[in-house]
Figure 1 (spheres, helix red, strand yellow):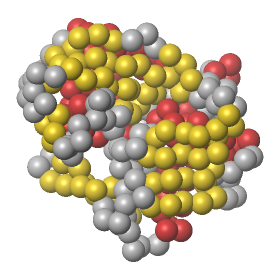
Figure 2 (cartoon, one colour; figure 1 turned 45 degrees about the horizontal axis):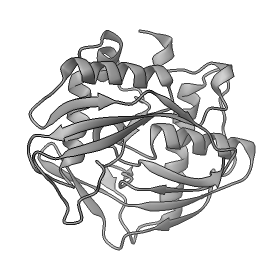
Figure 3 (cartoon, one colour; figure 1 turned 180 degrees about the vertical axis):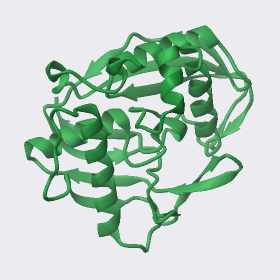
Figure 4 (cartoon, one colour; figure 1 turned 30 degrees about the vertical axis):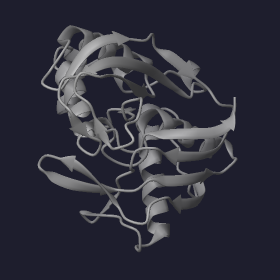
Length: 249
């Protein structure tokens, strides 16, 4: 296993996240609540062609990548067979994206996607993050059940923070953090009803969230990790918790 897939050197601490754009042809029409699972499976299947990614596929550790919904968005919620779309994949680790890009090119296609092109890996930075918005549903489970509107917002906030802190400490084992308060000082649930994503023949419930980020140094670092690795759970499998940020470049 290459250590670079899991941890980041001190020199890279200030990098916000890495990003690539994959251009693909949709081979079968897919509903917008079903396509995340199909994208995750495509990336995962491609990763089996790379020995380092293949090992992470079987590990239970954080994969530190996530992906957004195909662009352009389809207003009626159905991605059309025969059309070309762009999928953004992000990671907190540059090497992970380089390997994913190469693996997708090697696999070329599966039942649902035909690879067309991949952009170069780009690094993104913000000097100060004021808020994060999950543009794909964030999935949080509490005692095996999904968090849904009506349950404790404070508990939701705590779980999102704990997940981000664990991801940060996994990336930076030599610089662990344990904050006395959550890196998020405010949270807004943007949907009235939970959003059901298809996964292994069942539904996983998630929510779109707006997170207000504290100004201190370590809260900003955790927010940076969330941008690269995703918020909450099922980031690499379903692209859940894929965020956009407001802040200063």
